[in-house]
Length: 263
Image (cartoon, rainbow, N blue to C red; front, side):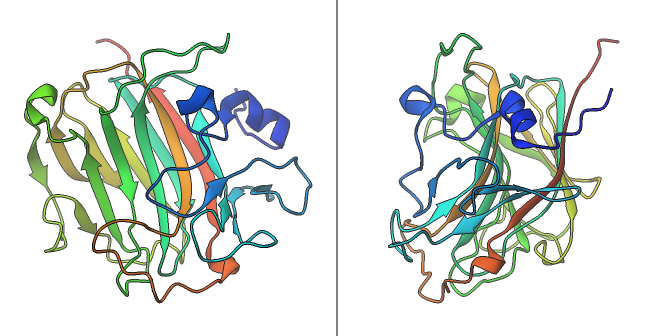
């Protein structure tokens, strides 16, 4: 079946444009500057722009905005389909670049039901398929952070530990920072998670790079694709960030989700 999303009406059938909290209307997290908006298709301010074969999550400086908290706007997607263990989640995308950009692709606990009600919203669990922290003089989208969250309570999630790691990992982030060897803003790459029960596997361009033991103790997840700009975390330096909107495009070719069938 043709699953291509070609316009905003079709996008609306599959995604929301805010976080699941505050009744599904939370427009940003406290750790970055940009706020999420969903202008109508064709609006020159739109942050969800369709091309011939892609969807771009834009980053913009709105009138009166600037490089400060809530001074920026950016697109995001929150999937409606419940994500569970046994699924394979994959995206092909070209990422934004520049100091202060923070593209992410992740799973967060909780589901918004078609009738507008919500499942239990507990955090963690969370699995970050990737985050690229372009900070402290690092403008290229090269280091792929593959993380899980326990909020300081690892025993609640099976005491997570790595099963294997392949490739080169950044010294400052020995358990998370995978060196892709390329700038993922210069071309399209495939990022995926094979969510095997308690043992998720991360993949980059089809190659397994890491497997971690992690028990997802919570409601089914939803997938998030977030164009985040600016950073407000201890030790973060983004004084080199430039108001360069042409570098802030997060271009999505496809998102695909499979469910493993029982043997």
